[in-house]
Length: 126
Image 1 (cartoon, rainbow, N blue to C red):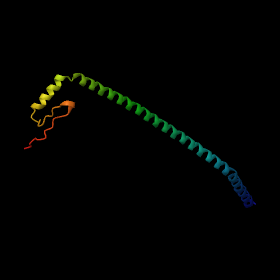
Image 2 (cartoon, helix red, strand yellow):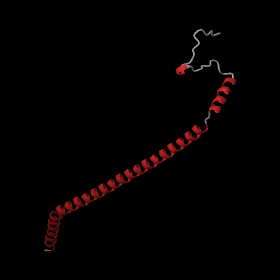
Image 3 (tube, one colour):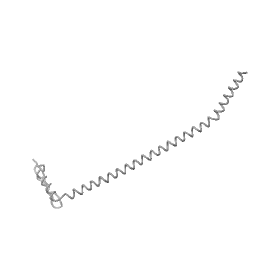
Image 4 (cartoon, rainbow, N blue to C red):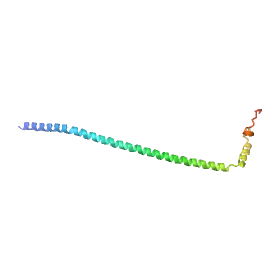
C-alpha cells in the first residue's frame, strides 16, 4: 500500500507540475515579451536623447565657429583699415625708390595715358 500511495502522490505531483506549466508558461511568455518591449522602449528613448544631445553640441559648435569667423573678419578689417590709413604717396615713392636700389629690378614699366605701359619691342637681351 505504501508503494501505491507513493505512486499516486508522485502522479499527483507530476500532474500538478504539468498543469502549472500549462498555466504558467503562457503567462511567463506574455511577461517576458512585456519586459522585452519595455527594454526596447527605454533603449529607443536613450538613443533619442543621445541624438538630441549630439545635435545640440553641433549647434553650439557651429555658433562658436561663426563667432570666431566674425572676430577674425573684424580683425582683418581693422588691419586693412590701419594699413590703408598708413599708406601715403610719400611711402609709395619711398618703396618705389627702394625697389630701384635693391639691384633686382631689370625692367621698369612706366604707365602712360590710360595706364598702358611702354613696352620695349626692340630690347636686346644679352
